[in-house]
Length: 266
Image (cartoon, rainbow, N blue to C red; front, side, top):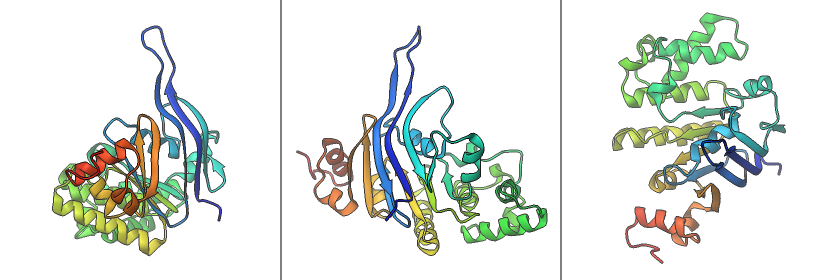
């Protein structure tokens, strides 16, 4: 079976300058994700998780040096034109960003921001785009979506803003959704609601899901397979149950021990 996403030898770094030495953000990262698969990307803060997620969408700053191959639906995101990347993002490949309050435009009502996704990908009927947006807000678990759609981001709670981002990402039924720390700023109850929503949407749509988190507990409840990112590399890639039971890399053992103190402390 041809994988939906294939990453080969991905390297991201910052070139040396007069003031600073060269810095490696990602080093020789390779992995695959199949259609419909649920995969966790686990790592401590600063391990490069968000940089990897942005690289998959071609959203890294131009100043960074990017080498390797990111094949999605046959398109190499690394070497593709910006026009080809824009056509892909939001339609076949979507992302829920880490900070809803900064990811959303504070000057636009949330309904307009969701509708803008449809308009950017060819919807010419503004009224139809708005109706589609409101419907998607409801499906994303936002109560009273008609009323919430008329609000600005700062008028919503953190959990509601996260649902708005999810609605934007799911609007055009992507084949792969990347969720970057989607629950990190939420309380435990809302966190559980968002994770349930992600799992439900993934099953109903048959899409692949890449869940990025520093929290193994979050990933363990959602993902069948987990990759561990450490020191700019993927150091372990295994079924989640196997990773929890017999982690091989020292960083994996440390992360498991953080969830189950005293476990795998070798």
